[in-house]
Image (cartoon, rainbow, N blue to C red):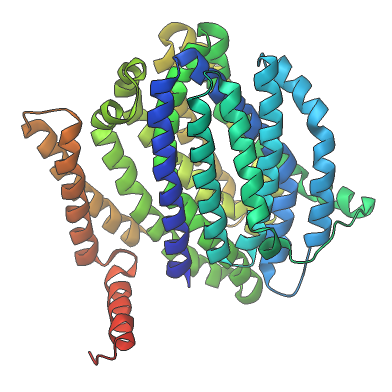
Length: 478
């Protein structure tokens, strides 16, 4: 069940990332750094606005709907979603205070509200472990975002048009799977339920909002100190790295977090830890080779994907950003499960608040002196700080397992892959993007071979079961 759902989430996120990659290729060639920076700042604000509004709703869905005991919170969630639109005027004023231009601010607020609508609907599907419907909704959104965004890119040159087209795409996608997510449920407006939801989700809402602020502080500081062009330069590198590398983590976490909640509720802590050991191995097996490999070939990826004005920064920044994603994944996709299981919501707040404080201090010290690279080094330090902070806090919540034997197997396979990829880079005469056509296949083959030999994540048993199922469907006796 875990492997099947992980595979579905992985496929849909790879599909989404492929279109996202295409967007970056076109946008960084179509737009100047200043215009692209306006778009990225608007996107960052929309994400923060959506986090603030959607987190209590998604937390209630994950905590109650995922239990599988017949609990249905859909009517309450729909009522809260309706009220979220009343926050639009406050959001616009906040966006203007953040120095967004009027058109960018308005489009960012609308985009944030459509993100809330889409993500909350998707969370209902995920809580019910309806991965197929989740996949269809994400694919529809991905295609519409790309089609409408690419169309807008050829009819306008400002960041606001990209934000507006994305809002339309999210809204239309949500309509496409609305019945699957909500059925015939109608909004219920119960002030006591809303207050209880807000109170229960307040620590997590505040903590995730602080995380979102910490995730964009460097962009806004760069825009303030060096202009929106510097923010666009940094954002192009960061987003290209993150959207590619976060895919495996989101895919695994989308499958194992609801399952872990259910196992913990029905079978207890030890069973949940045994389950989490396998989850961590699968998480590392998918994410670590992707992050390390990306760091090794980031120069070639930058030359292939980004416009000419963005490449120099990307060559310097992307290796550090790729390693930073490793710590981000371990913290947000794995360690935070400890706080969810133990219901220590204040630990989200402590971790997020310390991350934000660390990020602000480090960015304020490094950006004035080193510019974009100061933001890059600050990002790497912030992600590492966040992971180790969660590790300490988890000892007083739900101690997360770190099985050494499983971890060492993954490290050995990643090390073998890295040696081969690095050897190809140092021995090749052509250091351009075409080198990727040798490095990537070689890295995949070496890592897959090592994963087979070491049986990482039960790879051999999983493949054997898949082949056996194929044989049986074909009427062949193994």
